[in-house]
Length: 533
Image 1 (tube, rainbow, N blue to C red):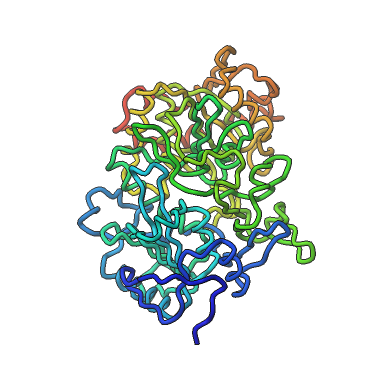
Image 2: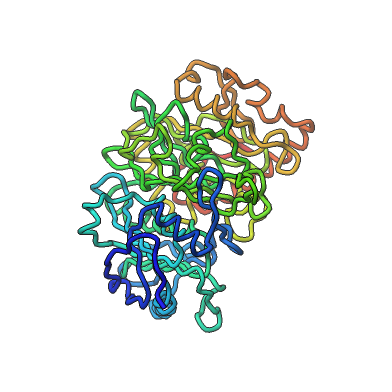
């Protein structure tokens, strides 16, 4: 017997996705209607501020080992095949698609029609079809929301089928586990099964754009962006957990976007229409804009809520350290609603250094910028991926390796051309540990990081002396208002300087080992821009 919907279902044809549902389909419901549906179906609960809290159960982060790309003629020669872009044959993908379609046929479905790329010249229309109301609400938060007039003639360029309740069988379905994320560039189709983690709906679309945009001369970037009153744009590159969302949400600057952008000949544009912030240890005092955005219409993942007061406990990581909030960008009071800005005046590479040896901020030469972009050093933060329970050192080229279908040097060359043309300074920022490695030191002070960023953005650091880091060759400011000289020089924060030296040399060796795979493609200046020992 068909169930009823809290909202008014819209008539919609899903035959292009191979679906002829036998139950009700709710297309493009409002946020309140989707919240009502989620609550009615037991998919979540409300916080005291009205945010919907959902659980993702066993998988509290992305499942990169379960992500595959169809091996087909249209894209085969361009894909950088390997452990990140694992191939799957068309016949096997089709088998899994049929399994997902058969599963969804007998479910109530929620459709969210959205768009990506704020610059209309590069816009892509995306239709998400989900069996969970809260997944449709998540997509509504993260995708750009079409106007009612746009929806009348909406025809998707890409479709995403989300079947989290379908557990696949590795023996029968040929998958690695009971979960599967697959991308077919020929059919313009994404399949997600066996995982409730909503981030897969977001990152799969970003992977698509990392394939499509370079073909149109646009540099796709895993970065946040904001702009000041003088329209000076800043970019913040970094993997999950390095501080993109936190640092770009600056009350003194307008937020363009917190995670994914394109850089065209006209300037920078946001890919998304919302933000996806980590909330572990979130505080009203430290991150007021994000705190205030988590209200009705937003989604929380895996956040523990007091059963009596309904207050979320952002300090509780008992479910996962990768607790998340998804919300429309307009819930940030001073966001840039156009989603667009000019060419950047400053670029920041954010790294979460688990070794605790990199300075909180350093200025990079153009060659060093290319070296660190290709290296992409950071730490995988607990919960960001399945199986990661504590920070571990990793090198994710272009600060985006899990999402890059093309060879990393394609993206690096696009960055090089942009830096040459626009003469934009690049800074390396450590938001990780100081005074010792993970487990012994402490996380870098958010107050100190913000003071350093503000000094770089306002040009204050143009008039100070710099010291050269003896191991990494980085230019470290000798002083900065609000930050002690001891903090600026990480060796001075360690009680045991010999232990610091050993850790620094260990990290330097890891840098050299990682960069060896790019040495033959990088110029001499870039090869020599790494650690000095």
